[in-house]
Amino acid sequence: LPKPKIPDILKKEGQEKTEPKSKKIKPPERNIEEQLQEIQNRLNELQRREV
View 1 (cartoon, one colour):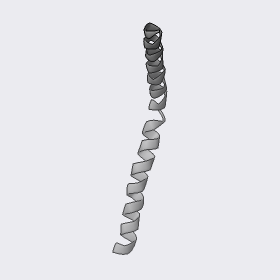
View 2 (cartoon, rainbow, N blue to C red; view 1 turned 180 degrees about the vertical axis):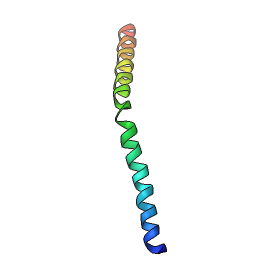
View 3 (cartoon, rainbow, N blue to C red; view 1 turned 90 degrees about the horizontal axis):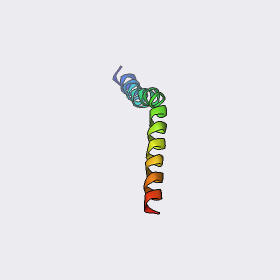
């Protein structure tokens, strides 16, 4: 019994590490893109001010 349990636990841990991240990352991706756009806009403004 312990032999099958160990790989099952490892598989469950691996799924917990990958699945929740993919599920959690998918919705915030839009927010991250918006943040990147805001940062790019700020950088463009700073570059314009410097020039």
